[in-house]
Image (cartoon, rainbow, N blue to C red; front, side, top):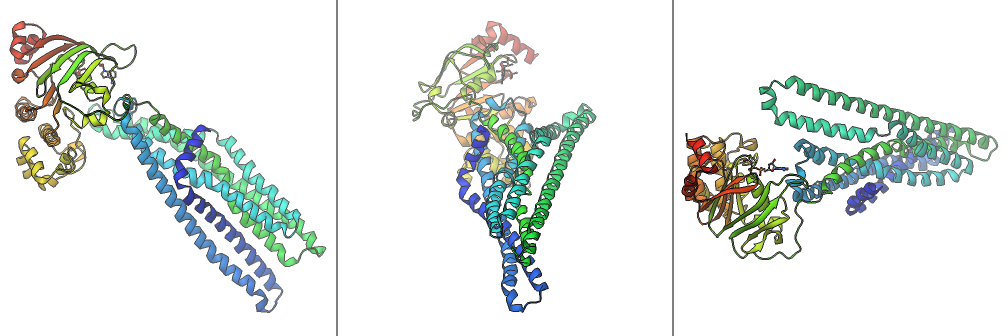
Length: 573
Ligand SMILES: Nc1ncnc2c1ncn2[C@@H]1O[C@H](COP(=O)(O)OP(=O)(O)OP(=O)(O)O)[C@@H](O)[C@H]1O
C-alpha cells in the first residue's frame, strides 16, 4: 500500500491531464452507448414506417454520437498518452537524480545490466499504472452512474439488473483473474529484468565469451530465461483471454436478463416497444467500461513490482551524506591526511590503517605498493566516493567532510587507468571537462597533452566519433585524451590512478611526459605500480596492506634496501 501511495504521489503533478483524460474516457464510452442506443431507436422506429421527420432526432443522434465517439477517443488517447509520457520522463529524471549520489559506492552491488533494465524496462512498465490501473476503474464508475440513471428512467428493474451484472463483471471477474494470476505480474517483471541483465552481460562480455568458448553456456542461460519469460507471457495472455471471455459472458447475460425483464413491460404496455432494443444496446455499450477491469490487478502487480525495484535502488542511503549547508569556501590546496583508517564494511579488514602524510600546495606525492595495498582506496576517499570515519583528511586546512562531494570534485582532476570515453566526438569528449571552453582553450589542452596532431590526422578531426568506450583509439591515445581533459578542467588538485598502466613502456614514457606537464603547479597524488620517473616526486609512500611500510624520496628509498628497492629491482632486471 505504501508503494501504491508513493506511485500515486509521483503522478500528482500530472493530475489535471489525467483527470481530463479520465473524463474523456467516460465521454467516449458514453458516446459509444449513445450511438448504440440511438441506432437501436432509429432501426426500431424505422420498422414502423413513420414519416422521416419523426426519425430526425434519432438520425441526428446517430451522427452526433458517431462523430463524438471518434473525437473523444482521439482526445482521450492524446491527453492520457501525453500525461503518461510526461510522467515517464519525469520518473526517468527523478530516478537518475536519485541514482547519482549513490554512485559508485552503493551501485556496486548491482550488475550494470540490472540498472539499465531498471531504468528502461521498469520505468516503461509504470506507463501502465495510469493507463491500465488508475483510469479504468474511474471510467467504469462514471459509466455505472450514467447508464444506471438512463435505465432507471425506463424502470428500476432493468437498472438494477445492469447494476448487478456490471458490479459482477467489475469486481468478481477481476478477483477471479487475480486469484489465477497471483504473483504472475511480479514474476514477469523480474524475469524480464533478469533477461535484460543477462543480455547486457552477454553483449558486454562478448570478447571473453568467445575467447573462453563460453558461447554455448551463455546461449543456454539466455535460452532458459527466454523460455521462462515466454511461459509467463503465455500464462498472462491466457488469463487475459479468460478475463475478456468472462466479462463478455457477463455482458451478454446482462443484456438477455434486461430483455427478459423488459419484454413483459412491453406486453403490459408499461414500456413502448421501440425502446426495447435501446435498453439492450445501451447496456452493451456501457459494458465497454468494464472490459479492461479484470486485468487491473495484474497490471497493479506488474507496476508495483517495477516501482518496488526502482524504490529499492534509490532508497539506499548514499555512502557519503551531504554536509549541512552552506558549504565553506575552499581556502587552499594543501592536502593533509592524519591517522586515516578505513574498511569498506563493518567487520572487514582495514583497507587503510593509520595513514599519515602532508602535501603542500603544488607538492607531488607518489603512492606505490603491491596489489591490494589500499592505494585506490585512498583515491576513493579523496574523491569522497566513500566516507571515512577514522582519522582526518583536510584540504586547505578544512576537513573534506565539510564539502559536498560535488563541490569538492570541482577542484580535483582525475586521470585513471580506465578512462571512460563516451560514444561521441573527440571534441564532445574533451568538453565534458569544461563545457563552455572555447576552441583556443581546447586546442591548447590537446597540444599540451600531445594529442593534437593525432586528432588533426583523424578523418573529421575534432568531430570524429571515438566509438563506444573509445574503441577506435589506442590505450595511449585514450590516456592522452584523459590528460587533455584534466588540463582543460584546470583544477588545482590532481589525482593520478595508474594513469600509465596497461601501456607499453615506450607509450607509457611518452604519456608520462604529458603527465609531467599536467602536474606542474598542481597538488598531485599519483598512484602507480610503475616506479620509473618517480625521481621528481617530493615524497613516495610505499604501502603494504593498508599501512605505510616506507616513505621518502626515490633515492632514499633505494638506499634503504626495503620493499621499494625490491619492487624497483623486480621492474628493472
Ligand atoms: N568496493 C570494495 N568493497 C570491498 N572491499 C574492497 C573494495 N575495493 C577494494 N576493496 C578491498 O580493499 C583492499 C585495498 O584495495 P585497493 O583497491 O585500495 O588496493 P590497491 O592497492 O589499489 O590494489 P591494486 O593495485 O590492485 O589496484 C583490498 O583488500 C580490496 O579487496
